[in-house]
Length: 306
Image 1 (tube, rainbow, N blue to C red):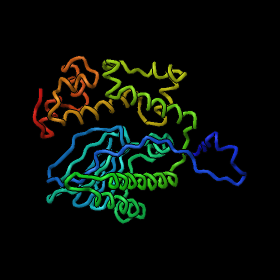
Image 2 (cartoon, rainbow, N blue to C red; image 1 turned 180 degrees about the vertical axis):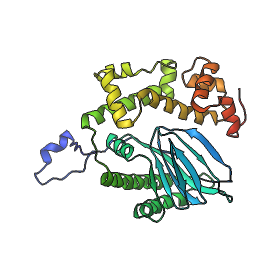
Image 3 (tube, rainbow, N blue to C red; image 1 turned 135 degrees about the vertical axis):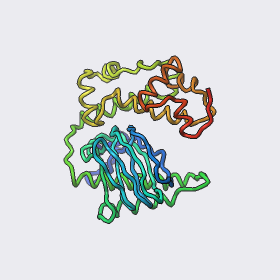
Image 4 (tube, helix red, strand yellow; image 1 turned 60 degrees about the vertical axis):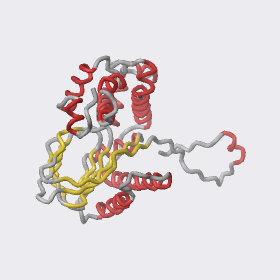
């Protein structure tokens, strides 16, 4: 972020010696951060996310497969998985596994492309980069309250931890990659992502009565004054996936969150996500995850609601 935005009413007061910080207008999100202890045999089937996934092994070991690459993570190891990378995880440690995991998103195109060019990052315990990142992540772990009660000050401390992580990752990427995305491509890719997220918001889906398939890249491109082909090109360049896949991942993430709320009927969830019928939503969810919404709800340990 290197644009300097100077308020119009300040310009007449500036001297040649004035120095300004850049304007910062990022959409940053942290969610799903938690610690968990699991037994030998625990596993997570192959999946992908629209967000970055960052994991620290606190005790034990785990095996993670990303595409066709296997990572054997030991105590103290850190793994960063970029958005859109399919991965599966399991624990074969006889004494089980204790880990910390966080999902986060940042819509800055330069950061996203730099991290995508780095690919999955395995910071092995004992390395200099690992020690710096692990120190910050351990501070995060100590901020977790077992009762789930957090003050506003707690939330600021948690978010400050995220920004420290982002700083370390951006610093690492700058030393290991060269950014090639143009400012124009980054600008339009960000606008496309924001348009998709805005169109898919629960409020907009309900207000506009949007159905599955109503959010189209052609319309978004037309609204931005660019061609659909250029929109696809710049979005893939920055986000590493197509707008359609990006939207599907957003829907899948939202669907999982809603399904885990036992007071919500599956028919209501289908409607909230823009599906005209529960069977239509169920077929799509099964294509995404290999199981129906009802099976996913049972597997996640929540009471069934029809």
